Length: 57
Image (cartoon, rainbow, N blue to C red; front, side, top):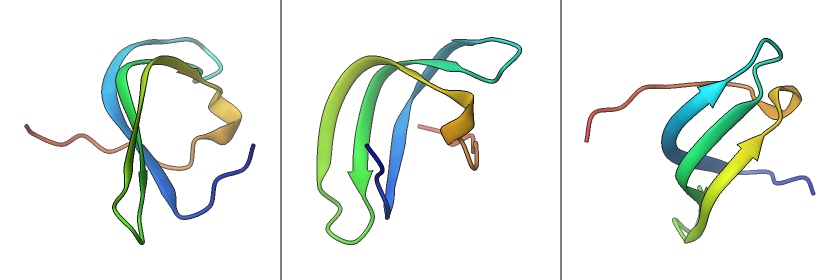
């Protein structure tokens, strides 16, 4: 499904040569409403990645 105005926040466990990511404790965050949906451990396909950003906790 396509999600516009949304980002994922998580810890990255690993990646491969296609930039597919394994994310742990992932959350889907809608930018307008700031609603958060917990997703747990997911694999995000590299084709869907626009930006990676490191943040301190």
